[in-house]
Length: 167
Image (cartoon, rainbow, N blue to C red; front, side):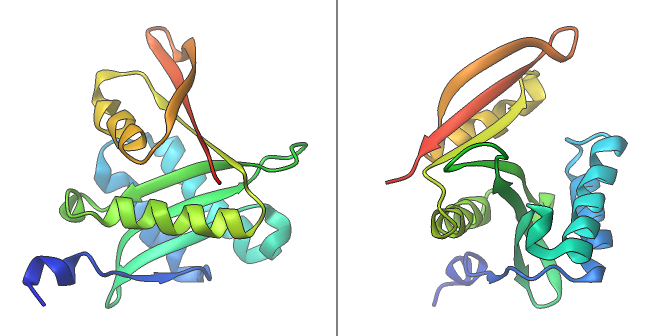
């Protein structure tokens, strides 16, 4: 197997563990995309999952190689909807970006959401130029831009909402 092919074969795990709180916090901070408040929220969602299990409404998928967290996704059903899910987080460690791990993680997370009844997945991100790679990633994964909310996060920083219909 070629070296680059091995790099594209992370192991996936759904079960959240106590050590994931710190590992996820480190990962999201390392990306340089998230504020300290957002990093703390990412950590809190792990805590909620550990404390409440499925009742938390937060589901995780971790991509690992050995004991290293390469990336993760957090998703869950949208309360009050019949079959819509939110993709709350998807992040890949900066040193692992560009190797296909994000696409593998997204595809695996979509399969898990579909298993849980998802028919539509929503993902949103900032409209700032820094997030152009994120928006391009969603489009490359088959999402379409569904809405734009001007000045949502801050003046000049809108919210771009993407959606993907699952078959």
